Amino acid sequence: MGELRGALEAAPQGAIGLVPTMGALHEGHLALVAAARANSRVVVLSIFVNPLQFGPGEDYDGYPRAEHRDLELANQTGVDVVFHPGMSEIYHSDLSDMVTVSAGPLGTVLEGASRPGHFDGVLTVVAKLFNLVRPDGAWFGQKDAQQLALVKRMVTDLRFPVDIHACPTVRAPDGLAISSRNALLSSEQRGRAAVLHRALLAGCAALDRGSEAGEAGDVMAGIVASEPGVELDYARVVDPVTFGAPQHGGPALLVGAVRIGATRLIDNLQWPALEPGDV
Ligand code: AMP
Image (cartoon, rainbow, N blue to C red; front, side, top):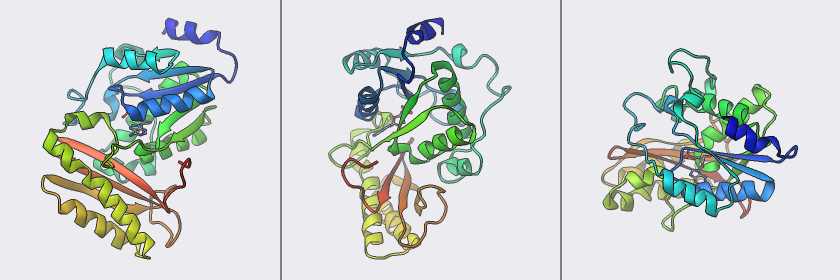
């Protein structure tokens, strides 16, 4: 920790940009680094697989880890400081016996309903990282839209002096959102995984035709159901800020989660479709 503060002490005011990750770096993470690089004098990349955001029976142990490759990639992409804390630097006491951040009602729907306590775990570690790194700005991916919304809420509600920046989702050529968990898919499963993006696109097309949110959700669910080996968790059209029911014809977020074998994948699209450069 002394090392981290030492490296950042000399940074001029307003200079520090943080990109929090769980490692196993990919193009999505590197896009966040590039955006942080373009806007910060000092870029800090944190790598910490946070046990508090995994539920019992989830893939904490099996989550991809690639420390050496991550450090190489961080060096190649101009990261100034890699903060790769050990468990005791983040959690000094028993995980079940400490003060944590509560994500509130938005933390209990969609991802929060499927993964109880997940967002409390996410916000707790993000709050700790903000306090340890003391960044001026932090970069998050639109890929995890509910997480991004909750981080923005936490910063507003708990008055963190950090500017939150969003980056668009980076996708593979077949549309699959790039994710560390994609490495856990067999090649057959990987081929099937793009159905989630196709379903979201079909949901957007349904909204374009004037469908109600519920009908567009059914269209998405039907497309996922037609792909063998892919199990739907949820496919919904929600308000992009509250994640509740959207206003008819108003801006919406199409969100989906599927299970493919033991791997759970999430994705989302904004509607109406964004112009290039928007997030
Ligand atoms: P993770 O390591 O999965 O916790 O992700 C760290 C950060 O990278 C989060 O802000 C994610 O939203 C973001 N991220 C992950 N995948 C992508 C992607 N395909 N495109 C853009 N950002 C991403």
